[in-house]
Length: 125
Image (cartoon, rainbow, N blue to C red; front, side):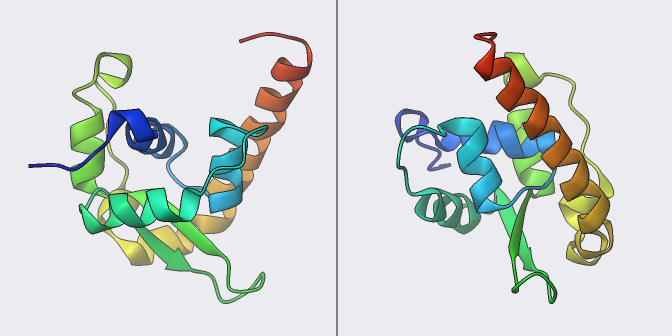
């Protein structure tokens, strides 16, 4: 049985990773709850233990850890109504592909976060 705890935000974290494809712990915090101090590291570790997400460590940028959903994680999240039909990328099943795509994918994630933060400032949902 999968230990995704909806009440703790595990489902939301997996959904965010499925949509964004790759993120840092800090970016995940910005998306989920920027004004609340929450421990994303424990949540991501729990999802990793369940085989739903994985991580790579980038040699540059202070050995930043980058998180991405596994193929299993994307398959599970794709069954939820809000993510139905979501396809997995090659990154979801291959840490080497994740490492090679990290620069581009993290840039896309940071761009999306800029739009999200602007929408929040304007009071949009």
